[in-house]
Length: 224
Length: 231
Image (cartoon, rainbow over all chains, first blue to last red):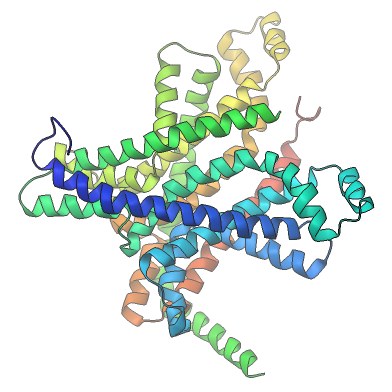
């Protein structure tokens, strides 16, 4: 598979890429979409001046932003099934739920700021054209707010991709877990290649993340 | 009514979980706070030093700092922890769990803080530095007396966010079995099977720490606000 690579590397790379990287990308995509949809909805609702919903959404944001993702993963994977057997999820699903809880809280906070940055006249003009609250936000406010939301969303994607590795602690076969399994298999066979394998994992993440952090910085600059 | 009874019963269970395991919990919390404190101090020193090197474009040091920042920011901290704890022994470097615990979050926090302080120092208006030079200050004296106090305050909100993340990231030391609060509570619930109680206590512990820190920021921000706003 990889030219010039030593014999041990080929099966490792095959497993880590075909199983690990694939799950990491899948998990990242699900977490990004879920966080964006829930976060943008909650963030928009947070701008509505109705105290009970605002208090509840605020609590949601502060809890899931305040907890380490590892703790959220433990709560979803171990504590929820203890509360009700129906809330039992496999490791990848539990990881996706935990990442969405955390990610949506981040997006909600960013959305609130983006929606509130749209001048009041835009709301008034849309109302004058006969748009209701939903139409006003969906067709007039959100398209403008999205421009402001784009840099933080790209930044969030980088964080999501990196944080998918934390799902390793519950054994979900994402890239770090598959790498660890290969390291252990080789160690068992009397070969030590932890530095090469974990080093390669760092390179993979760097190659994915670096262009995205550059893109986020560029989008941020273009905005101001 | 019955849900209310259920809830109060659960609160009792949570409370007895804390009482029954008070010593272990206190020891775990102490380790979490200890590692966090070392890393916050370490990340401040790294951030101020390398942030200044970046802002002043010190040859060589500035470039090395830039590479360090990009590598750390663009790779997952969990992989960095694996590297330090599980991979380094391969080349004969064996670090114990405590060393990896504080070192990993210091390296991680230091990279983010380098950016925080670089941005802070660069935001200090040129005329302030010129004023320092006009008063006969050396470059170092200008930095210590003018750029550091003003730029440091500008960097304060973002650096405190980094410190909060440092505290949260100490939970990842669970993977190397360092007995900080997450590891301790995980082990207790594995023995007692009080899963819901255990993770409720764990979540509340972090929320209390993180929420107090963010409340602290707001107080500190108001207290340290620059007289002429953001200069």
